[in-house]
Image 1: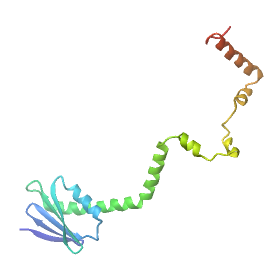
Image 2 (image 1 turned 90 degrees about the vertical axis):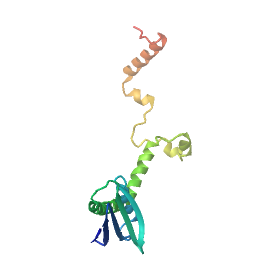
Image 3 (image 1 turned 45 degrees about the vertical axis):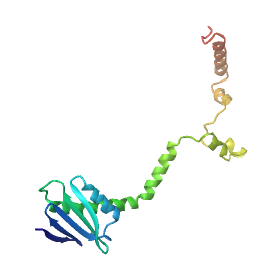
Image 4 (image 1 turned 120 degrees about the vertical axis):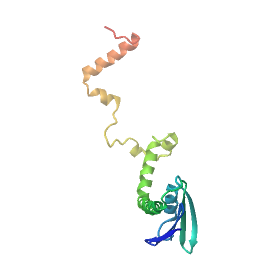
Length: 169
């Protein structure tokens, strides 16, 4: 004693403990159909089949006796629509996701290794460029302290080396 109905070019047939849903395969991508069917495998036995030319048939048979299969028909249709929408969003954002992933993996690779550094084309005109002004020689760094302070620091360094790490008084 089954009943039949039609929803947006989908037909369904309610059987005893099962529901058969049939629709045009051009409405939904195949991956969306598989995704929707997968959601139901914990509570239903799922069978996918071809019902005719460009028609897909999904049969959901409840694992628990007495389950309301009409609810399964509506839930399957909603899940099918949700899966199709997710696939569309993924496709629209594919290039963005690939770009972000490539940047993340590139940054995770760390600094270049010796082989990469040797392969770089660095000429004499670019080897000592310092666009940020952060490279500084030892002389430039300690010249800014003043003559007295630089000489005092050198004397302290010399006395540390002579006394084994202790400062001379």
